[in-house]
Length: 215
Image (cartoon, rainbow, N blue to C red):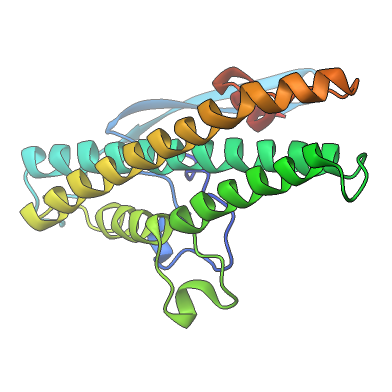
């Protein structure tokens, strides 16, 4: 009785918490199950109710739902950031391959890719072994917190919620750093690429990212 799991950024390790692989629990209510067989379809209602044995109040479970939804959104926000970064990196590498080794534009593209890689290493574990080897970046911290809250039906602790505030600011800081790298490089690089009849570097939009996920 869970929704789809969040999309997690690629990294050198698996996410550190089992419940990070799962979507949040669906809220109580009446749902419709539908079975389609050839041209025929069958429907029936399914009522989802809280487990009376759990011992949590509706208010406590509502707080857990809200916290899990917030962390879910933060994980996906980080994934969108990392996917955009990797996409621009790949574009830059593809343009670099079409230039002479000593071409000054090629060297600028190398520096741009390196600057993006420096940012990526602050967002996800990149060393061999990743989290298991002791490397814990923003991805690992965020999915671990999401898994902890998602795997417990009661009210989240104050320390969990305070840590969520800290990690949300780290996500925002990563977005600002990425925007700064693009702002200081993309215009000049695209101008030089145009003069060499090469395609410009283009940042992926949220709409494009969501469309890719639906495929």
